[in-house]
Image (cartoon, rainbow, N blue to C red; front, top):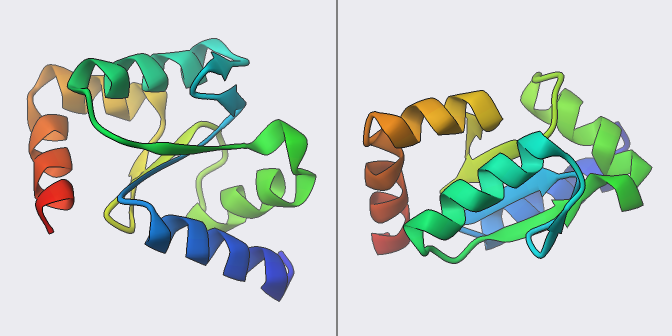
Length: 107
């Protein structure tokens, strides 16, 4: 990953309380896993931003190295990597995601 790509990812994560690196965007997810993440965050009715990794190959590869996580989507809350679709579903079902989001948005 180039230093420029790392800086770009750093900025996106720091500037947005909830940042999702996904295939497509929140209005038009391009895969089922990305759609799951969007639906969960929409259910919580919280503001979040997305980056379409399909339109930026450097980000697509760079985010995997950045998080040391091989799959997309990737969700960051308050600057911390939370996980992908399966982890978000689990956190949502057990109530932890709501708490993470509330704390992040309050800070």
